[in-house]
Length: 209
Length: 124
View (cartoon, rainbow over the protein chains, first blue to last red):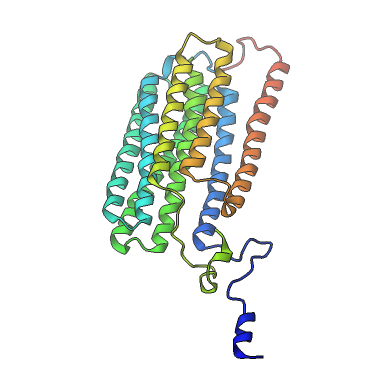
C-alpha cells in the first residue's frame, strides 16, 4: 500500500454519532445550564402566581385591585421593561461582534430603562402603603406585594449584575468568558420580561377590570 | 451547529464559537410584535366592545402569544439541533408551572366551596 493510499483511508472529518456530533461548544453548554436555572426560577414564580390567583379575591374588606392599580403607570413600566430587554439583546449582540462602544451605549440604555421601571414600581408601592394598603392589610395585598416585589427584587439584582458586567468588560475586554457571562445576563433579563408579561396580565389587566 | 462540518481540532469542549443566529433585525421584529401584543392586551382589558366574560380568556391568549414572541425573538429558542435540550427543558418547566398553578387554583376552589359559610364572627 502506498503512502497516498493510506492517507486516503484516514478520516479527515469525524462522522457524527447518535449524539449529533461530539461535544458541544462551551457557549452552548453554559447557556443550557443557565436556562435550567432560569426555568427553576420561573417555577418558583409559578408558586407565587398560584398564591396570587387563589388569594386575589380575599380583600378582607380592604381596597381591591380595581381601586389601587393605575394602568397608565403599568403601561409605562411595561414599555420600560420591554425596551430595556431590546437594548439588552442589542448590547449582547454588539459584545459578540467586539463593538465595545456600542456595548456601553446599549448597556447604559438597559440600565436606565430598568432603573426607571424600578423607580415607578417603588413609588407605586410607597403610594399604596401610605394609603393604608400595605402587605399586612389583606391576603390579596400580601400575595400582591410578594409576587410583584419578588419580580422587582430580580430586576434590582439584574441591575447590580449589569454594573458588574460593564466593569468586567472595561477591565478585561470582550474576552470569551466575559461574553459567556454577558450571554447569561441577557437570558436572565429576557426571562424577567417574560415573567412581567404574566404579572401585567394576571395582576394588573385582570385585577383592574 | 453541525459538528461534522468542523475540523477535528475545533471539536473539543471549550472551543469558542461566537456565532449567533441573532441579528439586529430579529430583535427589532420581536420588539415590534411585542409592542403590538402589549397594546392589544391593554386595549382588550379596557374596551367595552367585547363580551365581558370572554376578556380574561383573550388576555391569557395574548399573554401566551407575547411569551412565545419573547422566547423566539429574544431568547432565540428555535428548532436548531443545539436547541433540542433547551426546548425539552422548557417543555418540562411548562408542565411543572401548569401543574402548580392549575392544581393550586383547583384545590383551593374546591376547599372554598366545601367550607362552612363564614359569618363575620371570626376573630380578626
